[in-house]
Every structure is written in structure tokens, then in C-alpha cells.
Length: 307
Image (tube, rainbow, N blue to C red):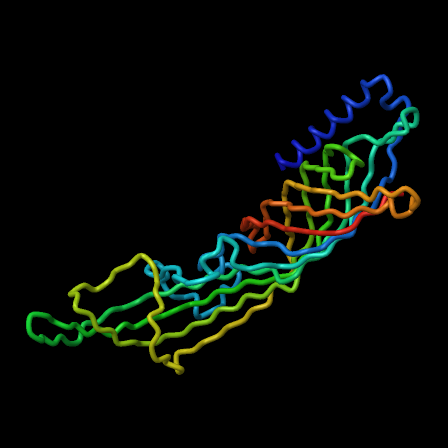
């Protein structure tokens, strides 16, 4: 709520400053300026989805009755080490409004946008596991000793996914408007509905045999998958559907526009290309009035048209 109040306060100050100009509202009107169609992907950071959140989503799950205090996040090689392990996709359309000065025949640098966005392949996933080491033998050969251990591993994989459709509102302040390249930034927020929500929980266990010349049994604060033979009788999967819920995104748009400037094609000059990055915080509604927060970075490309 504070962010929303700050946005409206900032907009009020901008409008007030514009109205105090001798050629402000006296010769100006609020007009529809242009439309924008754009889409792209977005990187999703870590949501605070842990077993406690999944227990709220699926309290009837037998797999969630376990004590997870000794379970740790699984260590991965490759992409799962990335800050943003999963990407979603989105499409949107926006209408832009500006103040137009009839005397100067000029638009203001402040742009107000409203629109709608649809996104899919939203998800939050985490894998938790626990290793149990059992020393079962040791063999001395010369001056060295080889130790043999059985490593029993349990792993839970949690997934929550959804789609969402949001109404969008943003305020942008433009630098070098209508030059060949223009930049803009500001504040924005979206509010809407998260639907097709689904939670899936998977469990598996396996055992592996390891040998080492070190008389050390690891006790890491992390889970390492050493491989081994899967106990197929242990495999369990549970899936749950959820009702739609509210979601909100507060973001900072960072945009670059490339305009068309031709001598003999005024229609072409109405169009421009844009690339926008909008890092922000995503608030997703949870049962019993709670919210979970995630960091996301949408990257969009699109086309705009002036009217």
C-alpha cells in the first residue's frame, strides 16, 4: 500500500509542476497517445516456498507430515546454480496517455500507461534431501585403510505452478522523446488473478556404496546426490489443485525505444520498437490470508504505434 501511495504522490507532484507552467493546463489536454504490444520471458528468482508453505497449500498431503528440520537443499551442477532457475512467458497490450500542449504542439515527457498482461509457466520449485551415512566395513592394505560406507538418500521435490492475468498501471518519465533513441523509467504495478494453480510433491529414496581412504563421514548442511540404485517401491507422487487467488507485482520499468524517422513515409514514422526490462517483487496470495514474495525480471520486446 505504501508503494501505491508513493506512486500517486509522485504523479500528483508531476501534474502540479506541469500545471504551474505558464503553458501548462491552460493550453493542454489529457490525450490518448499510443498503443504498445509486447511480449517476452521473465526470470523468476527464489520464492520463499518451503515445506511450511506447501503444508498450507496441501494440508491433506501425507508426504508433508515428515519432519524437514534435517533436510537441506540439493546441490546442483549447471543451470540449477543460476540465480533464476526457471523462466516464464508473458504477452501484453498497453494504452499510453500524455498531456498534449496545443500551443506548443508538443507532448509531455510523462507517460501514463494502462494495459493487461497474461503470463504462463510460472512456477516455484525446490528439492530437499537428507543423506544418512552407515560405515559397514574397512580394509587395511599396507599402510593405508579403505573405508566402505552405505549412503541412504531421501529426496522430496516440491513444485507449485500457476498462470496469471493482470491489469497493469505504470508511470514513465522519458528522456529524449521522439529522437532516434529514447529512454524511459518510472514505477509500475499489476494486480490480477493467479489461476490453474497446482502443487506437486514427489518422494524418492536410494542407496549407494562409497569407498574412501579418509576416516571421515560427511555431515554437510546440504544435500548431495551421490547416485545409486533407486528403491522404486519408495516412489510417491501427490498432486493438488487450488482455487484462483490474487497476485500483485510492483516493478520499475527500464525501457529503450527506437523510433522510425523517414522523409517520405509518415505512416511508418508512427511506429517504433521497444525493449523493456521491469525488475520487481511478486506477491502471490496463499491460504489463510498469507502472501509469499518472489523476485522476478521480465524482459520484453515489442512494437508501438502513435495516434
